[in-house]
Length: 571
Image (cartoon, rainbow, N blue to C red; front, top):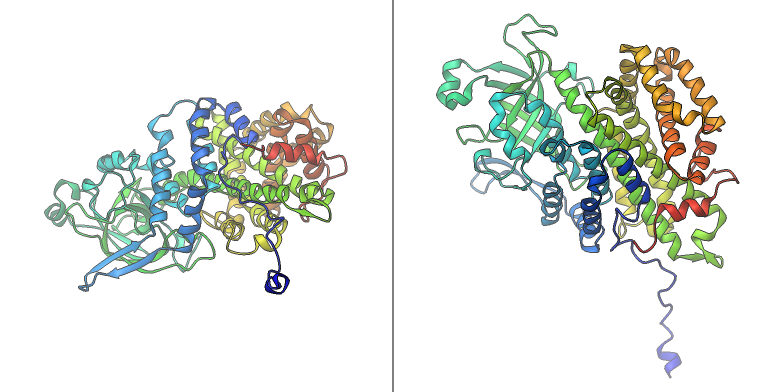
């Protein structure tokens, strides 16, 4: 009878890896800790270890799932028919934002500009990148806005709220809030990356009208009419936008009319809502926890930031910081995907052995681990350039490596995510786990703040402004490693010799950007990583042309050692 009653008990659950959770995301990653110390921010180790423990908890990791399963909702009107343009978020979003803001991910280097401050913040941001990426968008834009806003006396009252480590999502005038966020709106439907094609216009308010409406705060106020096709984080307290200044001036890059930058708050100094009309929220492939929108400015009011007609240089300064965060964000997502895949392979068996013990699977995972470690090393080295902007060579290196890194690191992401998903098989391809979400997050960092081609053209412009100085800066960066490995020495020497010619070949700009990043990555690993990591990276990316799928490491690669370093067990 028992045998008949139990005939539909068809299986027990076995050979399933546990979820990757309740782990310290900082201490399990030796490459991140080593990069933190050598780039000048070893003083931040204890704080990052505490943050890594918080971010790796199961309940914290689940906030990412909840925020993406319950995306933002637009409420254009209240129940009485008044226009409010409010965005409603799930409580998990607010919990994530609280974590980011209280940690100072938007403000730490500006509050305490000690040596290594940008590197410490970069490591923090990379850890948050392993948790949830939509919530990083408003944090990045707020962080990037500070240098420009600090130069505008009329906006001085905003800075304490922007730098505050209190997250305050309430829709109120900034004077009534504990903290404020800043978004950006650059692109329009007819132009996209070609912001010079923008048609949004800004016209100065007559002095009498501005003073009557806003008192002394009305100085410099402009009416703004137009639209933005991608308006990030419409719930932010203010946005920086680009508009054509229509003041009857002479045009050009000097004073007078031209493309200019404006600060457009949600609430005006008199407490009224600004006329920023949210048309709809974007239905995006990824980044679904975050609200991106289309808006119209119906005689909205804004204040100029930077010189008239110099909107693009003003935005490019902020773009340097946002592009750094694209590199950090992609490196963080890579790290998360690697950890989930490697943890799965350590916990699941096939064909009589653990997956991680299968030679071909070892090769794939070790190749992913190399890519992730190289991305982390590059990202923190790049952040040091932002710490050392007073050094001309470091500043120049940063101007070149920022767009190059955004191109190559971000471009590697989608293939990396797909491979990590494949390691987990069907378990990776379902929404019950995080791999699908991580895979969909990768492309946004390539697209946002300038697509791959735009980045590569920026590399050419940066190199072309001072070719001898650029070569000297790269030679100084690579030379210490060129003597450590003959393969790298010959390859890097040829790259340096060809740099002037490559910088003039627009059609080969992608190849150049890729090689510049690979050169810096190989140099960092040769000087600082264990020999088995550096040798495998050089053999697979320098001695042979990179390409094809992951899992092409040569037989000489010590895959087991690479994987043992990649994710410390028990951390």
